[in-house]
Image (cartoon, rainbow, N blue to C red; front, side, top):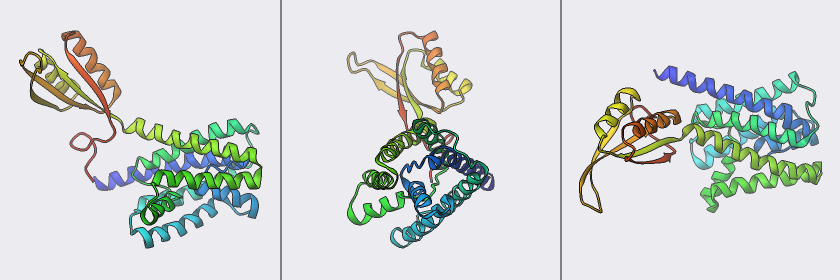
Amino acid sequence: MAHRTNFRNLFYITIGALVAAIGLDIFLVPNKIAAGGVSGIATILHYTLHVPVGMTMLVINIFLFILAFLLLGPAFGIKSIYGTIALSMFVDLFARLFPIIYTHDIMLAVIFGDLLTGIGLAMIFLQDASTGGTDIIAMILNKYLGFDIGQGLLFIDFTITFFAGLFFGWEIGMYSLLAVLVNTNTIDYVVEGIKVSFKVIIISDKWQKIRDYVKNTLQRGVTIIDAEGGYEGEKRKMLWIILRRRRELVRLKEFVREIDENAFLTVTTVKDVFGKGFKRIK
């Protein structure tokens, strides 16, 4: 089972690295868009020193991994190292396969390049891996100087886009800054959209039927809690349910509406759920 899980992790990391590399090679790098991170540094060095983007990314990341090991401890696993190598190799491979510029419209390059790289990196992050990068620097700044990690990453990315403007012109620098913002939001949207689950609390006189529907049809667990109404003091049963998918939530709401229109139902989103039927606690 563990081997199957590891293979699945590596498979999704590979696909994520492939998608991200296509976004870099087809849209961002040919238009000199340095969208922050190690790829942004490698893009600047590619045009100033004429070195391959993927190999430069790999060299920088090796240095950062060594720095992380020395200053932060062995916190980065084999999956992150694999993701770093895979992305670097794909970037140089696709640079040879797709040597032409597919669009000279920089806004299109920012949008489609960031969509592809954001989706690809999100797939890697969802496997509890990373591609190294400037987040290591941000973690070092956090540990030794007390910088917030998010603010540290923004500072580093803004610095990279500043140098992109310095070398390639301020218009490119502004597009690079826009690419940083779009890329960050794309990754957050994909990761949170996939990881999100739903916590449902239901108070209903038909609680037995709802419980049976959740257990037998949706095949989800239900916790039954004894509750007391604060206004009239009457004893009630409250159902506490976690659903993994939005379509399960839709089906549950339709069922409750059919059998008890007066039911009290609340829904909140939760980012992480651990336990049987969900993720293992690591």
